[in-house]
Image (cartoon, rainbow, N blue to C red; front, top):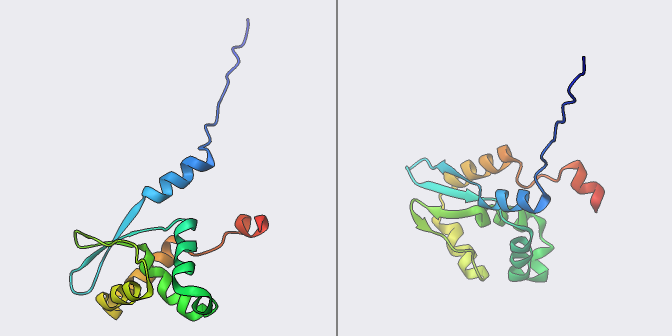
Length: 126
């Protein structure tokens, strides 16, 4: 009697597919006044554009950077598209549109999803 060999293939998603999938994943956060914010994790090149936009001096202010980065995740407010700010004036204008209570909800969602947390593997690569 012969035994049949079973072959199991584990399909692993290539890193490029993981990046594309993450870039296309969005979540919604409902604000206290009923506004719905669509959030997407921003890509590394968008973070670099952000740092270039705010300039060398502001880039060294970690409190400013940390407080402004969450605004880059906002892609829609209700059904209105929110383009990535191109300068500090646009960034400040966007920050003025978001009530403090909603900003806190957005921060909580980002923390829950660990979008800004460096994983151990990421730290080892640096």
